[in-house]
Image 1 (cartoon, rainbow, N blue to C red):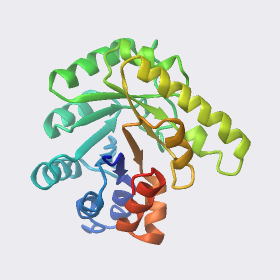
Image 2 (tube, rainbow, N blue to C red):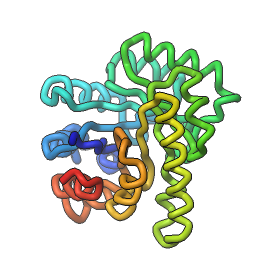
Image 3 (spheres, helix red, strand yellow):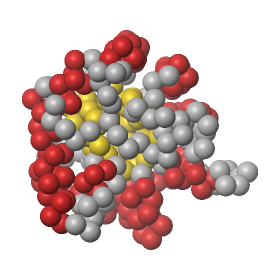
Image 4 (cartoon, rainbow, N blue to C red):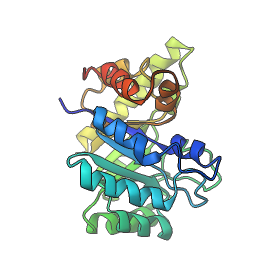
Length: 247
């Protein structure tokens, strides 16, 4: 079975940006994750470059193209002209559109498809016409995948934040996991690939993978870096792969 772990290295860039120094290295740590067994790398280059910068995107794209054939780069962001131009320059394997306001700390909700129909259709066309796959960030609601399919998406990423937030409430976690699973199943029925991301950990991943074994990819940033501070990048990749039943 191929690994489904995509490591989000935004937090590495946050730490680096505290000083005018080249370390910790975004590409260096991405290399360790990929060499250890991660499927790919995810980054969210925000307009203010408060973590990932445009040059990081170019460097990561070059790293994967030159040294990691078969691995993937995913760029996520709001589909404004700046982001679309960066995608066309870097040519990632996958583009995830998220409905973030630039001031948001992190992605915390899926698309309102009715309010953004025109924007999404135009943006999806731009990316797909350039040969890249498009994923759309959706709330864990079963009616959302059909709307993503209608605007041309190849995949969805189910927002798992509400599930991840139940780390101290087992009963609520069951309810939230059922919502994620129902959304994933609706996406499968709509012919879409299914990714998942937000607040996933080695503790809550096993139940998710049991309920939704056909997930293509989990994108993990905050939880990954929190674990890596204790265990290091290599062992953290393995910890997440074990949690997904891949080791």
